[in-house]
Amino acid sequence: MTVLDDIIAGVREDLEARRLSQAEIEDAARAAAPARDAWAALGGGQPDAGLKVIAEIKRSSPSKGELAGIVDPAALAEQYVSGGASVISVLTEQRRFKGSLADLDAVRARVDVPLLRKDFTVDEYQIWEARAHGADLILLIAAALDDAQLKDFSDLTHELGMNVLLETHTLEEIERAAAVEARIIGVNVRNLKTLDVDRGVFGGLASAIPAGAIAVAESGVRGVEDAVHYASQGAQALLVGEALVTTEDPRRLLQDFREAGTRAMPARRG
Ligand SMILES: O=P(O)(O)OC[C@@H](O)[C@@H](O)c1c[nH]c2ccccc12
Image 1 (cartoon, helix red, strand yellow):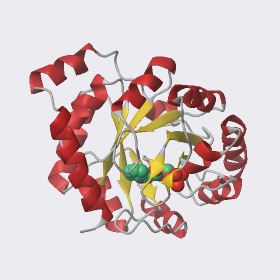
Image 2 (cartoon, protein in one colour):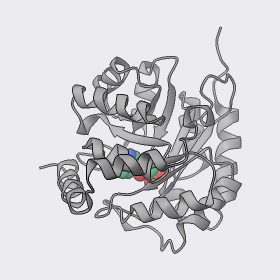
Image 3 (cartoon, rainbow, N blue to C red):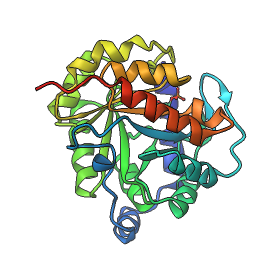
């Protein structure tokens, strides 16, 4: 059993414990304000948009345990917005990351940028639930889903007006993402089966991401040098958790990532 299998087993159990009827969750999703456009916020279709940052509210991680005593996730999210975050990611997985839908609600109530509901999506119910709680973007992890699920879950997400961040870690997974026409493709440099981080994985796979899709480098940004590295390798956006929750000044660090990263982006060809 890999770490990923173990996390997913817990996610399924927690989901059954809170599950409402399908009619109830659909009503709640339809009552929510329309989803914001995360694709546009991440520079989709805008040449030379600069390096974008998806800033994550991450209390804890399976590899390190508690990262920071986050007392007020909404206040942290406001700092992220003031530093120029394009999207805020809120982890809602409870057991290993100590997140919750309450965190998502708290952030939604205070910030206006698009929100990513960051969880291990293994059931369509979670997609309705994300929308009901004001999410604009959801994570789908290729390693956790088969091709039919990738397609069906993407279709439902789009029907609800949201975007998908499709997370990959291998060339084969990028090909599967391309086959479902994913428009926002992440490469997680952390292997979710072993939790090992290899920052070289992004550069090795970036050229395989289809030209029309937004390339997101996920995990392992310790400081500005890593941001510059990913940007120079073709990242259009970064997903950053630990470095932002542990720094004294998230606003400043975010600005530094964006400025230095944007300068490091390769000039567009053609
Ligand atoms: O804290 P980091 O190394 O900056 O990583 C953030 C993010 O990429 C990581 O939290 C993550 C990437 N994919 C995930 C899937 C589930 C849970 C968490 C993740």
